[in-house]
Length: 56
Image (tube, rainbow, N blue to C red; front, side, top):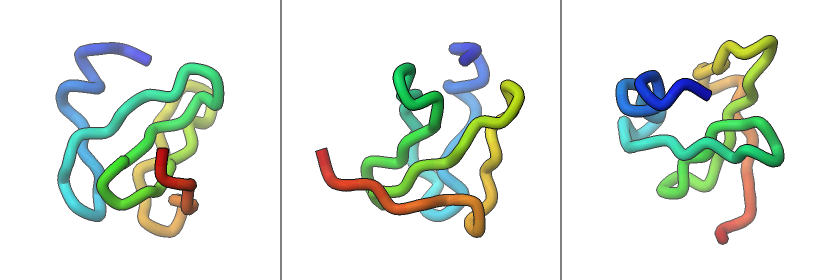
């Protein structure tokens, strides 16, 4: 994931910073405990595409 892009994009639900999970290849919003998939290198930042994650 491009670090410049990570500095620009935000969670579409709460507008907070997203973290990149290198192992799962997804973007994580720790605040909302949701993940957003990355398909073919493109982050899918739609509410409907998010899925819940366990708090870490």
